[in-house]
Every structure is written in C-alpha cells, then in structure tokens.
Image (cartoon, rainbow, N blue to C red; front, side, top):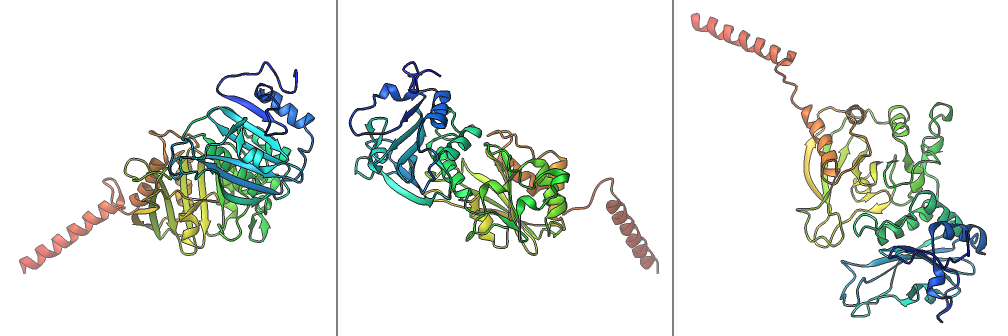
Length: 405
C-alpha cells in the first residue's frame, strides 16, 4: 500500500486524515497525515499499536461552526473522543473528510483538529462536553471495523442528511448498543424464532445501514435494549409479528397522528415536520413510522416511551415547537396484525424513501386512511347497501298500509 502515511494521497477537500500521536508541536507534518481509505484501514488494522485497547469512556463534544457565533443552539460541530488505558482518540467527520487523531493528552485531540485550534465562538462558548458513556468492553478496532462494515467511513457529506452529528451519533449508538441484550418474555430476542425456520429473529448480520427495519417489542426507558438487537430484515419482522409476538390480535382502540420538527433549530413545523402514528390497544401503545433510515415499529406499556423516543433517541422538539398530536381517530375494530398485513400486501412496507414522493407523512397517511376506511361499511355494490334499501322498502310498505287504514 506504499508508505503508511502516503505522500501522494488526495489533497482535495474530502480526505482521510490520521495522526497517530498528536503533539502540540508541528510534527508530524500535515501532509504526512493524509491518506486513502484503504491506507487508513490497513494502517489501523495491521500497523498501529494499542488499537485493541478497550474503550473506557465515550465523550460526545460540540463546538460552534463559526467564530462569529453567539450560540451553538442552531449550528454546531459534533465529534467523539474515546478514552482507553493509554490513549485519547478523536473521530469526526465534516465537509473536509474524516479525521482520526490520537494522543496521550486529552487536550491535544479535544482542542485541536488537523493542526488547527477548534472554533470556540464569539463569546468563547466553544468546546462543550455534551455527554459521557461507558465503553462497554468495545475495543477501538472493533468500533472502526464496524464503521467500515456499515459504510459509515465514506466521504459523502450532506449538511442535513449525512453530517458530523449523525456520524458522531452512529459511534455513540454502536458503543451504547453493546451494553445489554434485549429480552423478550425472559428470553434473548434473537432466540425467539426457531433458527432452522428463518434464522435468528434479530439477525446478527442484519443491515446497519441507513435503511433498515427496526422493532422493539417492549420499549423501556430505564433499561434500554441493544440497538443492534432490534435490527432485522423485512421477512424477519413479518414472521416475528405474525407468529411470535403476543397481543398483535388486540383491536386498535385509537389511532393518534403525531408530528415533530425535522431539526432542533426549527422555529415552526408548518413547512418541515416528521409524521408518525401511535396505536392504542387494550394493553399496549405501538408506534409505526418511516424515514430516510427505514421503518421503525415500537411497542410499550407507556405512551411516552414510543411518543417521545425513537430507536433509543429522544425525538426532535425544536426551539419553540415539539411533538404535537395532530389528530385522533377510532380504531374501527381493526387489529394490529390486520393493519400490518394490509401494509405488507400493498407494499407500503418497503424501504424506498423519497423526500417528496414517498416520505414519512405519506406513510403515516396510509395507516390513518386504512383505519378510517373501515368505519363506513356501506358500498354501492355491497350487501350492506342492499340490506339498507330492503329495510327502507319494508318501512315504506308499512307506512302505506297504515295510511290505507
């Protein structure tokens, strides 16, 4: 692969950068830290020492995007710092590419990126520690291999759909997902379905990419299950709901249509909002929704667990607006599994997503419209209309007979 740090690497705006031992002096040279994705992967997997150290702590930091910013509420850069026994690692993504740094001293990776001081803002409201999480016995190389296997280490950048915050969130979520196995009726969820029939209920090789199916059978805010155990294929989700999950034959008592803003900085939801459905049954609250990440189905005994959270994350509430109940409809004697089977039969449960033609609002509308359509059994060609007309004729005949007396 040439030199470990290629001197002929891409110097464009989007590039991979790795500094194996950040020193506040100028060494190593900036150019020596530029490399290709292939070079970075080979270097970390084969040449760099201590990559098998376990992560003791995951720190999630933010700082302003510009020196003139008075606040980070609307705009900020997010990056991750990992603490191991001997090192501090920083990992981050921006419009310039992906940067991985390592140092014996926290301040070298927390306060600097690519030989430059990080932006602190006009009022020096700069680098903030947002949260700490335990490392959960994950090693540095396990984390990085996961990022490569799921194509998160690509240089594509979009300020809304593939940005620094989403990159940092993926790291934080993966390490957090290693904390505890999800249990379903006292049994690990991936053992619920007979492997000889369809493989594990939650496949250990399931797709962790941006578009995926996610099912949490019992959301609990105090003991969250591993995110990875909730990922599955369309087939696995269908088999699980049709054959193994209890209470799917409960009738839907109420359909609730909720919305929330797409971004934290939104002042209003009039133009941009996410829509999702919550179903109330006798014993459960179910949430069903679709976004650019896939289709999510959740269930809990408490409304707030599915209304206020999605895939282990708090829903976006915005600055002046939040999660709103747009409308409520009766369930019209439809069961949860009838609704789900309808969605599958109409091919609504596909992962294709388009911001205009196949989005969260259209997905929510289909659920709401199907349940609403069951409320009026009258049909021009149906028996109900014929029976109603027959009854009307009988009443008219009786009325005529009375008039004749």
